Amino acid sequence: MKHALIAVALVLLPGSAAADIDTIAAAMERDDAGAVAAFIADGGDIDAVMSGGRFDGSPLLHLAARVNATRSATLLIEAGARLDTRSRKSGATALHAAALQGNADLMDRLIAAGADPNALSNFGEAPLHHAVAFGHHKAVTLLLHHGADPNHSQSDEGPPIMITARMAHPPVRQALGLSPMPDPAGAIVRELIANGADVHARDARGDTVLDHWMYRICNEADTDGADIVDLLLDSGALLDKDKLRGFLDIGRSLDNVECDRLAPLVEQEQL
Image 1: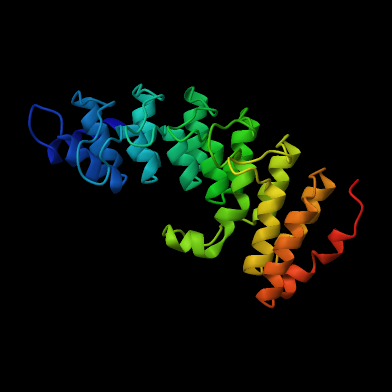
Image 2: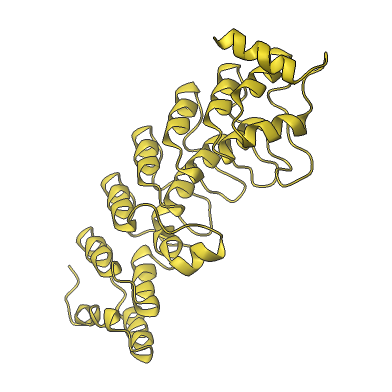
């Protein structure tokens, strides 16, 4: 059956030379496994890099992961495509792209083939950053299971736990063209902490994840944030009461009743 599929695809893509890179990229957007199989059988460069267009600088495997073309990516992996090739623009690997999509099946295939779960992009972000930022709990769990370091980062944003508050914010997601968080942020925060995420970590501005969540509650009336603040405090996060007072002032100026839930923390003794 597999050989028949390749034969049909070769008829659809005639000529002695492999299909040109733009044609195969279009096939990947459709996850046309037949066309990709034909490209491979015809001697196409499986590590080719896109030049021009919206996928400029993307190796084929990265492109396949980026457009969620699991069948096409699997064919490239099985054909021996390099797993460490990176987008020329971002330095992201195919595993970064699959994590961004939350494609746990493809992530599992990439890691099984030898992809590095701790590879850093040009921005100092690991695949775990992408899975966390785009709200994919299953992808987060998979990466941690396969040895992703929850504190591995050279990003100004800090380790993955630092971005949970910002990326869960609906206006931020809307501005980036993203759908609402597919999985609850609290579940992801809990998963990261259970696997050793440092609740004391700070970003380049010196803020902690607790600071970010308190700000979000007071500035944006987040209804789930208070439970995450409790989780962080129970996990040993240190409360900066001066910052909290500033956040409470913001909340009062916005008549934000959700922020009022944090007011008792000002009088609470730090453990």
